[in-house]
Image 1 (cartoon, rainbow, N blue to C red):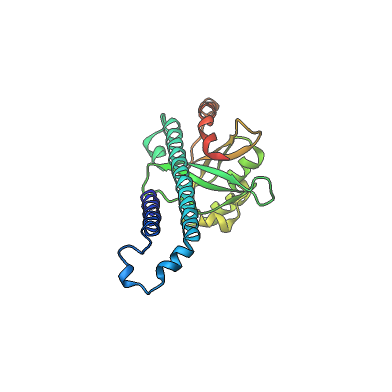
Image 2: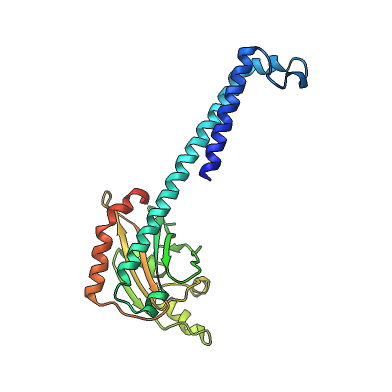
Length: 245
C-alpha cells in the first residue's frame, strides 16, 4: 500500500508539471492535435481550479500515507510486544502448554461512553494458523472485558472444552467469565485458562487496553510467576504509549 501511495503522488506531481508546461507553451502538449478546438482555452480558463484540485488530492494522499505508515508501525510494535510477553510467559512451561498458549493485546475504543468495547490489535502464538478474532468484547464482558472494567489482574480456570458435551464449557463461560453462550460459541479457541492484565497509560489516568494470555489446556500460575509477568508488562508499558491513544 505504501508503494501505491507513492506512485499516486508521483503521478499527481507529473500531471501538475504537465499542465504547468501546457500553460507556459500556450497549448496542450502532445495531445493538441487530437483534441477539439478551444480545448486549451477551456483548460487555461480553469487552470487555477485544476491546480487547486490536484494539490488537494496530493495533500489527501500524503496524509493517508502518513496515517497508513503509522498504523503499520504500531501494528508491528504491538505484535512484537505480544511476542515478547509470550516468550517471557513460556520460558518455564512444558512444550505441550507452550504450543496451546497465546497472547492477545486488546485496545479499548469509545472508552468514555456506555458503548466502550475491546478490539484485538495484536496476537502471538506458535500454533498455526493464527486466527485473529473479530469479536469485540464489551465493558465487563468476557475475561478481557471484566479485566478492563475492574482494572485488576484476573486469573480464571474453567473446564476444558469437550466437543461431546459442549454445554458444560459454555455454561461456565457464562457463569465464570460473564461471556454470553452465543458469543462463546463464536470464539475460535476454546480456552480453559485465562490470565488478564490491564494496560495502563503513563501519561493519562486510564486503562486503555488489556493483555489476555490464554491456554486451551488448563494450567496454573503461581503468585511469583504472576508478579514477574506483571512487572515485565509494566516495565515495557512506555512502549505501548506510542499507539494507544
